[in-house]
Image 1 (cartoon, rainbow, N blue to C red):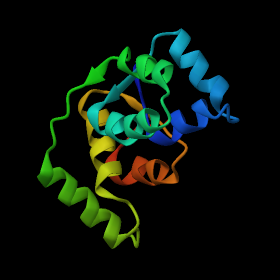
Image 2 (image 1 turned 90 degrees about the vertical axis):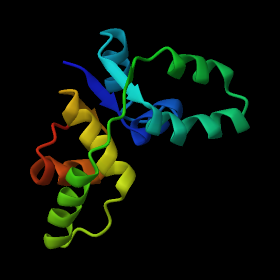
Image 3 (image 1 turned 30 degrees about the horizontal axis):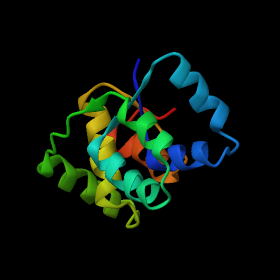
Image 4 (image 1 turned 180 degrees about the vertical axis):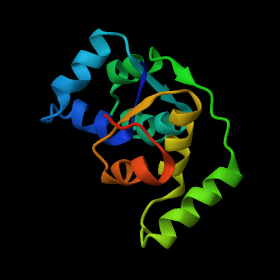
Length: 125
């Protein structure tokens, strides 16, 4: 099992938040992966704050290639809208699709991923 760690979980981890121990376990068991979208959300803030060690940590995590299926994104977004869920952004849909394509779970503190569990067949930890 591999786990795609979402931006919200990384931010909580960097701040020593309440879910840090869960991510510690995943890191120790070498189960985590990332992708360029998540890194694009995190790395600029780390650069501005000169957080080199955190950037090194992230650069050592295995990256999943992003192969965006725009038709699937459109279909999932349509299902979301039909269910009255108009706040799920395209980046979250791309992350969810990326996890599904590679058979990963998503570890996130963002409630959107729990909503996508049913609508997109996503595994969320």
